[in-house]
Amino acid sequence: MLAASLTPALAGPPYVSDDPQPTDYRHLEIYAFTSGTRTVDGTSGQAGVDVNYGAAPNLQLTAVLPAGFGHPVDGPSELGLGNFQFAAKYRFLHQDSFGLDVSFFPRLFLPSSSATVGDLHSSILLPLWLQKDWGAWSVFGGGGCVISSDSSENHCLAGGVVTRQVTKNLRLGVEASYQSAQANGMPPSTALGLGAQYDFSDHYHLLGYINRGVQNANETDQVSWYAALLFTF
Image 1 (spheres, one colour):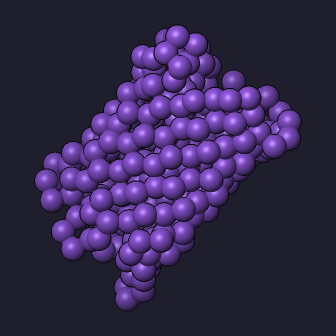
Image 2 (cartoon, helix red, strand yellow):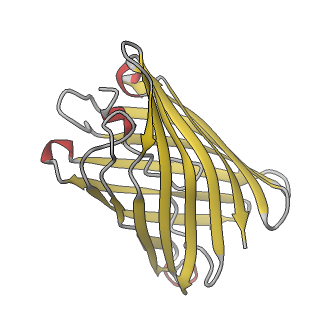
């Protein structure tokens, strides 16, 4: 169960759900992040770099390079490389013409070198993400399914986030997310979370997030966290 809980977050930082906004054309976003989850079986997490580049108008290319750790309650801790990720986000509908931003964001997960710090199988996530903005408020979310080279690990996920710009530099948000059973013997999970982004300047930002499972929490998510420094250029 601990190994199954170690699949990397399928996330739009700092949330589990993503948004459809691609990185601006010819601009770069670099997240130096750490994240983790605690269950009844132990604690797992990862730290690394998440790089997004605006390769064309409405097109973002992404690479995530993580190192992971696992600390089972009944075994030794382990460190190692996690599941490297490569993705491309394409926004094909716009709020100014359609009323919503909508993007397709396929994400490829390469196999990890260790089941304790990742997933030994390759997989691909095929989601759609949507967003609507009203002044200081934004609502975004969506979902999709993960297709794994091990068919027993196929699962789907969905989530939604409401955020508000509360000051010039601070944005806060709340999230509800759901994931179907990720592997044989693993139950589905539902979680509620709180997130924040603070902008020190146009180029330096701090992100944080914490959530708690409300369905099968002991097995899937007693508590999860994410923190990152974001550099934008």
